[in-house]
Length: 419
Image (tube, rainbow, N blue to C red; front, side, top):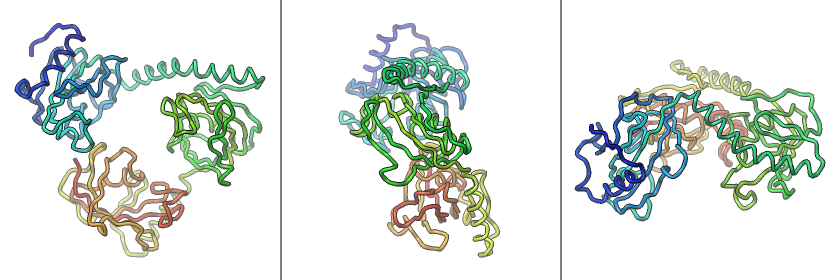
């Protein structure tokens, strides 16, 4: 391909205008039929899965409405993965190398098949994705860049907390990764670490002392797994600073809390938070996992089921029909028929009863862990049964009145499609 030397600002306006009519769509297409053109095509290696690409990216409609644009900000980094579905930028990045710029022409009907398009996008319209690839770096290099970026953002936020405490004469400690805290009681039990399950009583306040939440009001400590559960980053970093039985206060800057979005009306954007906490219990969640795995084995043996397999995640499963399609991959939309029962045989849900299979995107946390990790054990067209320990299901909380806490779940599943 020819190389063009043009200023970026001029180039972007040209590329935006290029999509204004279907007659200007290039004849050159990708392997799966997406038209494209390179504006700068330099020699160099393409990014590999697991590396990070630093890019500028803009999506523009045929009416010249740009609805996503990173050209006016710092380079955005994405970890390279395998392309999933029509128009996935990962497929475009694979064709490029540092210094390249290109435009890809996408049919709006296909691009927005799984989501609602912006109001100004018309059916049958072309949408362009304009990409300028700045760099390709290793995971280690990206970690260094991200750490430096976080530190630069975190420091002025921590200064606010320091000044607040110093003005009140409160002595504090500070962890290496940005948690300021005070200790009321040291505690004598285990120090929680990554992967440990903790139960914590807490009262959450804004820095001005206004309370927004408290487990004490509910009379039940809050359970979560360090570095696994979906709590704010400040909890993953702050709670392990206390031993079992320890009490104190952790002060969390916005970057490690709810950030620019805040959380509802109670926590405004960019709020500094303080949590008075007590670490009630520290335990190994794998102990329950092992206990329930033995229960599942006993259940299977009592019923003469000997052809079961066990995944590395601790999922027991049997295959009734292998299926002749590929195994579902992360980020694919998967279509599944299922029936869910408890170990006592009581059914709690079934897509078969509704006559409508269930769809979800694999690996996005839209379903319980046992599904994200268990469905890929079957090929498309496959049919079988998953036996899930409660840590891979609904855990201690259960789900509604149909799934009690710490329930082992059985799912008869049929993988209909993955795309």
